[in-house]
Length: 76
Image (cartoon, rainbow, N blue to C red):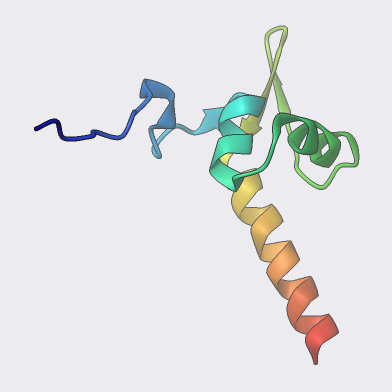
């Protein structure tokens, strides 16, 4: 009998302060294209680190909070 073990990636570490676009997309459970669109429109903030663009983990929290607040305001 074989037991399925979920695949874990070292980059799925919830304590990382900054994420790649792909990691951020996985955390939000959206596609890469959607994540790039959120970044392009400014809905999710990014920071430069050297020549790279990274998404601060707190930017995802802020984005989700904004959506929750907007949903709450439109539902009332």
